[in-house]
Amino acid sequence: MRFSLPEASTDAPAIDLLIGGLLLVSVAVLGLVFFLLFSYIIRYRHKSPIRRGELGEKSFRFEIT
Image (cartoon, rainbow, N blue to C red; front, side, top):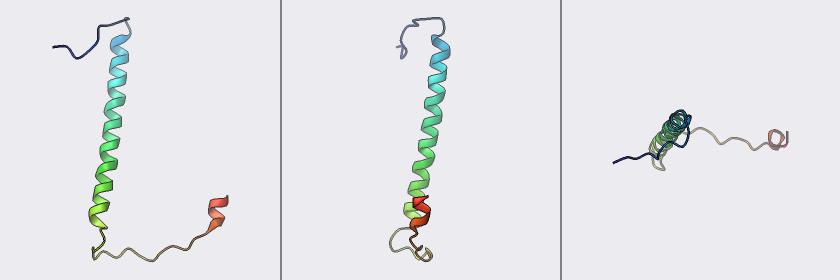
């Protein structure tokens, strides 16, 4: 059983390798983002005893610039 299409040019294996590498890097970054997201969700949940610090003061000076 083949999972790839027939080669349409001589450069097709190099392009397939490039796309596979980009896909692998994208999946790794996405996995890291989801891992960090879920770890922060678990760590800073509503009834957690961890001190979150004071709320920051809103300043529009930074946003305007």
